[in-house]
Amino acid sequence: MPDRALTTRPVPAGQLALELPSELPALGIEPDWKGQPRLWGHSLHPMCSYLASFPAALAHAFIARYTRPGDVVLDPFSGRGTAPLQAVAEGRIGVGNDLNPLAQVLTAAKLEPSSAAEVRTRLAALRLAWNADAAAWLALADAVKATPVRSAPRVPAAGSSAGPDAGSEPVPAEVAGSFHARTLAQLLLVRSALQLDDPTDRFLAGALAGILHGKTPSYLSTIMPNTFSMAPRYVAGFVERTGYVPPERDVFDRLSAKLDRLYRQPLPTSSGIALRGDARTAGTRTRAALRARGLPDRARLVVTSPPYLRVLRYGYYNWLRTWLLGFDPATIDEALDAAHRRAPYLQFLRVVLADLRPALTDDGIAVVVIGDVETDRGKPSSEGIGLAERAWEEAALPAGYRLAGLVRDEVAANRKMTRLWGDEAGRATKTDGILVLGATEAGRRRALAAADVPVDWTWPPTRLRAI
Ligand SMILES: C[S@@+](CC[C@H](N)C(=O)[O-])C[C@H]1O[C@@H](n2cnc3c(N)ncnc32)[C@H](O)[C@@H]1O
Picture (cartoon, protein in one colour):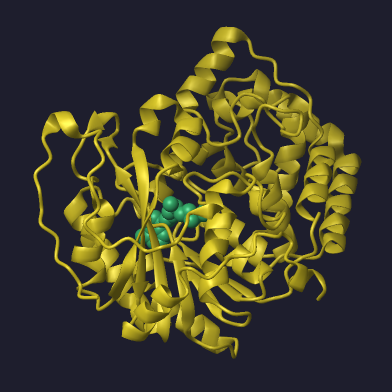
């Protein structure tokens, strides 16, 4: 099938909501991931909510079709690690990369998990530390909550291993207002103790980030939904205006219950690697990391969803989680803020794809999920319309890929964004276009040939269950 260039058509302003017919050949893959239960896949997936993550079932649809056990599966924008975790859960080697430190912690927690016994032993030690020094941590939390930030006592930094008397930083008012004093006191202790470069502590940190805020009794604060953090100023104002009294929630009990849920299924036995860095060099760094571990150094499949044009601020919308982990949200957003407009975005994607191509096997396949963004912070915009088509023409084709076809995922808009932000944001991502690319002609042929292979949706898979 010849590669087709696209004709660029101007979009009349009044027609922004209309879907344009795709000009790329459709690939005959049924989006049956949409029919699977919300929590389909390994029990580690829901460790912590993450904006714009794709379902594990979507990753499975391509991993099952396009790889065999032992193959390498790579996601250069891994977010909370969905694709590489699903890969290792299916006996593949999963590699995730992300520039956001929160994403890297979550991906690493899932790909290099400690055993349930190790994590529970560490949790027990933290509980003992609390029992030994609860009065001092409580006095600190009480003082933090009772005093305006400027004159409030300082608290130990995340990961500093310092005690309650060795404070070095203030607690933002919106953090202090979100928790009951006892819950805050326990969080201050645990936050100071956890070392993110230790796999056991990192697992606990990821699990704790996942229960920080939400509306049910599983969560430590009920002030915000679980999916994302509301504006800090709004939260501080809400506490002041309404006299919000946070419920008392025991960090150790809730964390223990969370561990029960996460360890419901046996841990994957395959290797996984979590890298932190810019996607523009992810291919090169992945090869080096695989080689250093004596593993095959090229991926048979890339499954990825690059950041959408201008829609999300991953730091700002996670400020309570970044406080817990000791990351600065503004620094995160500055680092991720690479491409606002379509032209630089496509240039960015082109560099990412060009660096990835040598990291793919000769018959390698890249699956790139691209949202059609129809509004830019509430205002209609034509920048994102037909983005998948443009991404093929201006990023993948010049980087040397061969097009197998486009899969349309029409339901994504309602399921993903509307649920989070209401109708306004629901309009921001109307459909996902999924580009399926061959690294070479052999990859393209393989992508076409395996498109209609039936996929087994039994989970956990019978074959792996027996291992
Ligand atoms: C749409 S999300 C991917 C979500 C992922 N598929 C999941 O299921 O969780 C896009 C990701 O790209 C990351 N990102 C943005 N700019 C990046 C860059 N220059 N290099 C690497 N990652 C980047 C963001 O931190 C975010 O996690």
